[in-house]
Amino acid sequence: MPGKGSLFPPEDRWFDDDATGARIHQLTSRPCISHLTYFLQSSITPDLKTILFTSYRTGAAQLFEAALEDGAIRQLTGGAPIHPYSPALHPEGERVFFVRGGSVWALDRASLAETCILDLEGAQLGECTLGDNGRRVTAAVKQGSQCGLVTARSDGAGCTFIPFPRTVIHPQFHPLDPEWLEFAADPAPRMYRVRRDGTGLECLYEQSPEEWITHETFLGSTGDLVFVRWPKALYRMDWTTREISRLTDFKVWHISPNRAGTRVLCDTNHPDEGVFEIDVASGARRPVCRPQSSNGGTQWAKDRFATAEDFAAAWKDGAKGALSWLEVPADTVYGPQWTHPHPCYSPDEKLVTFTSDRTGHAQVYVAELPG
Image (cartoon, rainbow, N blue to C red):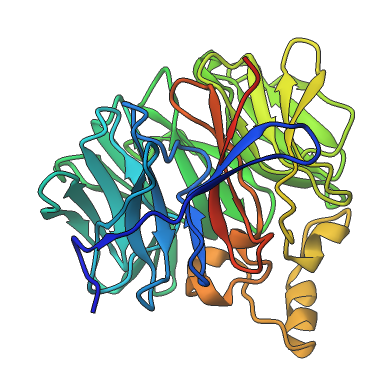
């Protein structure tokens, strides 16, 4: 049986996108779910030689890597499954941090040695995020009836648990001041910030019941935030003043800014027009490609936040799901994430990674940007 360290032959192929002519590299083709790691952090190593991805080809979520040059695939983890969207590359590229259950682990890509960074007994952690140039790590936590987030140094020292009365998702370090974290709460209101030591907790935006705020993140090194008001547009929030400005006049779905905060990648839905680059200064968009993903999740056809009643109706209709994908195994998510493109820039910002189930199974793709 394949396991940690196993090698797999290349599965890659090249083709040109039907809509834009962009050169597309498909890295995986096994008849199983294979998808990129969390889209707010690049899955491509800093040396631009390797792409990380999660695959279920061995029966459970494990971490793999594929060589961009020849497509050769290597399995990096084995045993107990990982949180499928948790892997985060250290800025140096030699280590990968990921979650198993209530633990954060660091994996050395050369030796495949794993080190447990922190362990919370009886807890489930969400995806982990690095900050302060890889010196700190954070993750959302659910431990019994207690929710919150945890922060620590990336060597495991100085662990701090920050409680919060509702489900926490997507905590992120401020790119200019790692003493601050931004995170999302489920259900709304969604956008919050807190200091790394647990002080200074505040809601950044008291959204109205009619507003569906989602997919917030930092606008690169500007330190400001960008967020989606679904299904209206993309907005920017000044971190200091909280002044909000509208950046686009079209439906934006998942977003991923470049480092300078001058461009933002996005996919689209209802209708699916493809992946675009948005110029932050003008709001103009340039098409990248058409992933042709199925974009699962009936909630995205609505113009308001999905409620508990929506999820209950989905269960009644035979769909599997929960109020947060943090709370359930990856194969039972309502509106499965692997059916969404989740575009992200490569470290040199010349490539765009995305996931698509256009072939019937989620696979990993890379698109070349013009020029």
